[in-house]
Image (cartoon, rainbow, N blue to C red):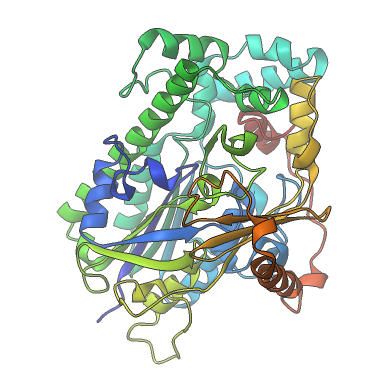
Length: 474
């Protein structure tokens, strides 16, 4: 076959169990469901990190966070030492395009190297001035005063425009004169939630109350700072708005799907839909993302469509990592190329029932000084406790083992306890020893040039204001 195009759409903060084709009860994702029905769905895809900087860096590098270096604080410029996926695809003759609504994947973070065309989050004059004013108020008068000045409509613009992002990608595709590789990031499900995303509202009054009293840059830090659990009706309102954001992203994706079909490109394109990480709604005391390594945060949807590679309706139960997308792209790019193809954990084998994928997958969440600093600034009573620990996890099909840098560890039996509510480490010492040994070997596995990585440069104030608007940094 000739080399197909590749278009990867990543929907930030989308947990797999809120996607229809993964069994969700609500019709949040009719277009993703259609793509899955026409392609291959991967049942168990695990991200290398439950936060954006490290997760995207893993996709672009095919490395784990402790290997690629984007594993410290959340504001981290990508190191020079490793080539980016767009560079490798361009070397293989692809026209490379990127559109990102996430400030962590931007030119300022040196994450755009190798793109022939790239468009980052575009902020209008009003939004730039609004964020600058809020920044000055925060620094001089503190977060409580600044939070009173927040305007939901403007605050949500910090997440960008999904419809505009996908239309920009379509414009780049129209200009392509050779096979294209595209990477698009949508931010809809990421907090804060838009006031207009009420398609699944069960109680308009509770949704209005959530939007008025909780929704905003400090909503998840507030929950975590006080170890709070929301009243059920308030939790329902948060999930209703989250699901509404998922639906909006899906509708925008559906427009692109239809455009690809009308343009005669759909069947000649590997269309991938995924998420960088999930989202927690109080599981394990976590709200938002990060600070835990359980399935609600690390298991992400992954759907691939290309008739030449995956038959319709395929469902793959192999265990895969999200950054296996990297090797898949290189494999697809090698069709018709005399150079040797890559081998190993290639997602193109997803419809092969004999392929079992990986035996083990790994995730990490290191201490996040910037985010914890924001939590402290937002709530004077915040006590980080266990969240200051470095966390590592190794997962098989049946078990998840989590280890902390203070020596604590947990083991969950995923067959009997899908929600990972009770550690059974004391009951299975032999399983713990096996996973501990595998994790120790994983942590020692580093690229030869890892120690040569230079310290990252400082991030400029414009990017910092975008990240503050999303609640990441002080």
